[in-house]
Structure formats: structure tokens, C-alpha cells
Length: 217
Image (cartoon, rainbow, N blue to C red; front, top):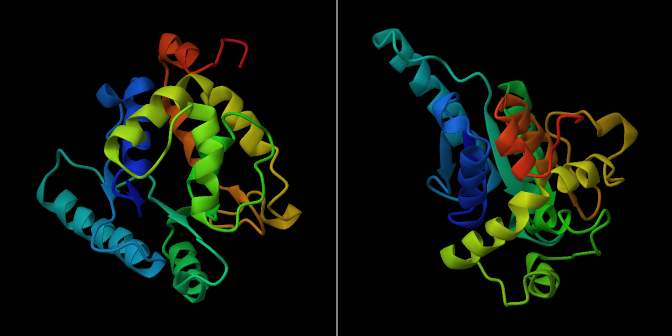
């Protein structure tokens, strides 16, 4: 299960990625976008609550299974944003409950920029990413569904490059590089960890090649 703070950007990307990897017939990936709110505490609480609900469903229905992994995808936004105070507590609760968190500073769009370059420019707030994405796409980018789909179409063939760039980020301290809920200290993202796990689930070699991977990978 993956819980996202966005309604369009993150869910559309993740749904498109799972389809492109051919996971629809082999893995049940459940994606929720902005379930009741977008703040870190609400997202983590939803993930924890949904896990408990799933456990009850499993006891009633032998055809269902508990989630093997649970992720929350969220942004820090700007340093003065209201969510800044809520992030530490939400991350602590996620770790305590076995929920993995992919944090982007300041926003998920950093992950898209990594499809083009190894080092994203310094971004203070999410709006700072718009001119960068506009240059990459050749058109204005906002949070609409149509723009999200256009962004996905541009990004998916570059997935292998983005993962290489994501793994080379210097925004995490050495101690936090493998941390399940580490937060970038400056512009960066932990989304590559989630994407790495999704890619590893795919045995469709043709699908992987379309995303920039080859057998040697």
C-alpha cells in the first residue's frame, strides 16, 4: 500500500509506473491519494488505520493477505510551512509502526527533475520547481490531471536514469542513507527507494527495457 499526499501528481505517477512495469497481474499495489488530508500526521495515521482494517479483512477472508509493505509519500514544503512542526512526530510514528516514508524536500517534483539531471537546483518551495519542469516539458506545469499525465509520459522512459541519480544524492547524511524514513537535509527526495522496490518486483524484461533498464542491470 502506498499513501500519497497529492490527488493527481503522485497517484497518477505511481499508478502509471506499476502498469508500465507489468505489475497489475502479479502484485496488488493499493494507492491512496490525499485520504482525508495532506498533512504528515493524517497520512501516517491513515496508513496505520488501513493496516489494522486490512488485518481484520484477512481474518474474515482467506483470499486476502496483509500488506507486505506500506509506504507514505510526502513533502516537507518550505522551511516555514505549517507542516514542519508535524514532520518529526509523523516520521517517528511511521518508524514505530513499520511504515516506510519517502520524503521529498521541498516537493515530489524533485523526483521528476532527477530524470533529467543528477543534481536538482536549490528549491525553497514547490513553486520553484515549475520553471524547471516547464523547460523540460516545453510547456507550463501545474497540479492538473492532464499535466500529471504529460509529466509521466516524459518521465517513464527515463526511470533507470532517475534511479541512478537518486542513489547518488548527497542530501542524506551517511547514517541516514538507508533509513526507512530519512528526511533530505536540502533539496532532494527519497522517492527513489520506493521506485527501486517497485522495479525489483517486475519480471517483465520488455517493460523494464521501456523504462530504460537492460538485462545487464
